[in-house]
Length: 217
Image 1: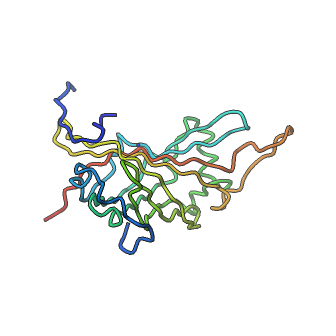
Image 2: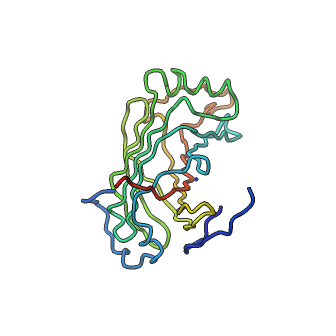
């Protein structure tokens, strides 16, 4: 998920058109950048400037990349107490886009996501820890095809900025690798030379531009 100023808050000149009870220690909280502490509050993902995507090895020799365009997000970041940070993302499977219409239709069909019966994929955080510097680890539960399993994301803080329209933004990159068969995505074809047409390992990528939310009074 670059217009971010690293490790500081900046204002750009206009241009023409996880919860309490975390099992992780927080010994590094005292070393948090003051700019991070200032980001405490509710945020939402700015979809036009973010990407929730994936990449997977195809036929053992190349990588196919795709993303989901339609999703809702609820984020709370606590820069003073990272364990209080939490996130929830609900993704509409039918919005998958790999750049090939036929492949997208196959992905949302019964062989893979089975979007007719399971139209949404969700991630809900369960704990967050500051690992030092600008790096965090967020544990959570990922639900695909009705199967819920734990995952851990590495989150890197990219910086914060006030854009020309007055919106306060914060940037994070999140990554993790899963075995898709753990969620029932087992379809494959074997290659004559050995190996599989589609790798079981899938890399998930969260390139996030988050906007501070204005909560109703």
